[in-house]
Length: 155
Image (cartoon, rainbow, N blue to C red; front, side):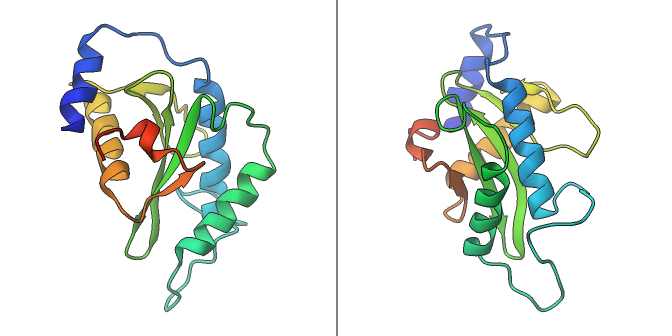
């Protein structure tokens, strides 16, 4: 259902990225570094290791530490972060725009640009739809700040 709503937004012709797009990318980079995602070099806040079950509380503490050390005035006003969790810990992070439905910044490798992407039928648009649906459907998703109802109105 979300795919239909998000895809419909893409067809409406919105082509301008949200004002907080650059900050969304910076927030993702800070969180990815802290969690050790996307091949980010050490040190990481999150301790990965054989036999250690990473908890949501550990992930939340690392995310909170990462955003505390960054200047992110639009976090919670213009966008939110969603950490998608798997059985072994965090899988990916996505920044979702609040005032611009269908816009998101997806995690990417260090040194590569992470532009804002709009939900749609192209390759990256489909990824935005997929990650947004997974974040909204996942009961273990960690929202920063907790504004799931604003991003996922049908959930």
